[in-house]
Image (tube, rainbow, N blue to C red; front, side, top):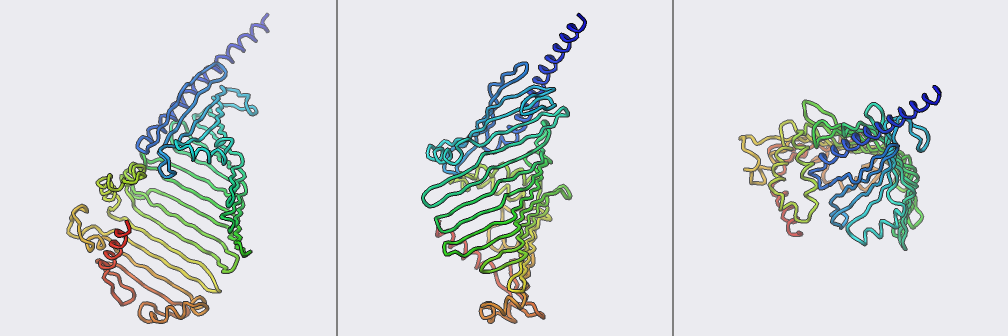
Length: 440
């Protein structure tokens, strides 16, 4: 009798814990959806959680996320997610797990345009993959999203991605997250003229929100090898492609640095140690928030004229004291090397005038101050047609210093100096703007 009574008490306790786990799981899911809704309120993205049906051992719900899709030629794009939620504390779904809940969602993507939907169905006949999420006891989560093979083929083109795999983790009371992503092998044929193949892409992402609409993001993405074959049979192999982005907070402002690098390019024109770097320093948090709010609005065709005042306000927030931009580019070829660098900084109007009162081209150019340098080794100059093309500029704009050919430049007070020669930039800028305007 005591054993039976003990079993009954155990069963009731387990049912109670399972029901309570379902309650906690619903709270966590609602919390995360609400945070996402607030974050995307100004980004033309609507998030809705519907039909949450909580049972004792399992619950179900669906989520829709709809966004403007003008860039794809449609009014909207919508992700539909149908979820099963298995309650803890001991979960028997896809193995044995421990936590408040384990959710499994099936996801589908649709557009408001029927033609795009037909194309999407041919590329992703099984939808956009399945996501699994474990709600941990400490208030955190682990999520995994996987897709089947993604493929498309017509008379002239075809491509195939052997699946995508994304893992992330975070907390339900925050939008901060960290994760990894990877793809399978990738292959493509473009217009029957070019064939591409790639080893898997893999990388990681970290996001930390320091204020609403202001995330600090770090990204690292790498591809071991990309093979490119042209119709005439020529081949190029691009090895160890790496893209990195890092943002950090300094003096309450944001510094963003991006670096793209390639170890080597094997083919008709071999290259080594190719890189491009860009760093934007001291962007205010207010400017980040303003641009995050404004960017979705600029997708419409008439957006720039409709939001001209908001653009001016966002630009004024961006152009603040200590703002600077640095870029660098370089690589090795023909037994030599080439490097370039450019450093620019923002200079507020000297008379203290607000930006909206500036009118002349000279006024705007005077907001920029900086310097740049190009260095080309003699192996590249003397081993190519550059030797003849650059000959008229030697000792005028280009100076030979030992085994290097160097161009030094600086910009200040609206004028550009290349070596000792000065160029008034305003007429050139006005000529360029007139040409652009004439084409619109």
